[in-house]
Amino acid sequence: MNALELTGQARTHVVEPPGLQCLMHPDAASAYLAMRESAARSGIVLEAVSAFRHFDRQRQIWNAKFRGERPVLDAKGQPVAVDSLTEARRVEAILLWTAVPGSSRHHWGTDLDVVDRAAMPEGYAVRLEAAEYAPDGLFGPLTAWLDRHMRRFGFFRPYVTGRGGVRPEPWHLSYAPVARSALAALDVETLAAAVRGHEVLGEATILSRLPRIYRRYVRTIDHAPRMRSRWARPPAR
Image (spheres, rainbow, N blue to C red):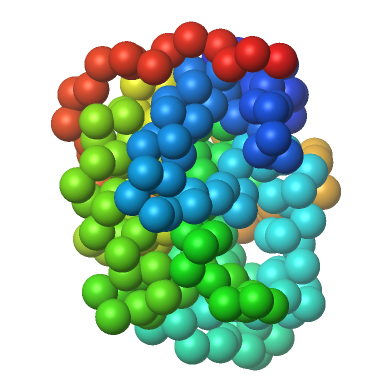
């Protein structure tokens, strides 16, 4: 991927798989479609509620949280009154759950937030909260199925153990064969160029702390074991 693709400012590295209504990297899409078909045989209707996310969309989310227009949660999932925080602390609070624009793994088209549509009652509003994915939660069977099968298709969870950066996200899957090289290619300078002058609120604070943000919130993940790109072939358009 080039710098614009790595930071979500281009869509040249993603495609829209038939019937999914979302954009993914071609290799991730092929693997996901194969995994979805396998899950269906177990009665699970795997659905990606978020896949590729453009820089502009990530900036909208970030800026809305910075202004207090969207909820900002602490490490325990409780609301934070951002208006009472300094700019530096506001940036740190948002980073627990939301990536700085340009640094989101969703920019690569390799990462998905998934649910089991078959498990959802009519009218259910997905919250993407840990309790939903716990053993006794609505998506507990989905979690168990993914634990057993996702690595066979090249997927892993980058945010599991809470290593001092992004909080655990059991709904977040990443396609390792492509995401691994994207992470290696994204450096501080590329990220700084994406943030600088692109109307990201808190820009000065972000740029002054970017090396630390990069180490803690971009590089600090639960790494996947080495996996081959078995499903690396473009889906039919």
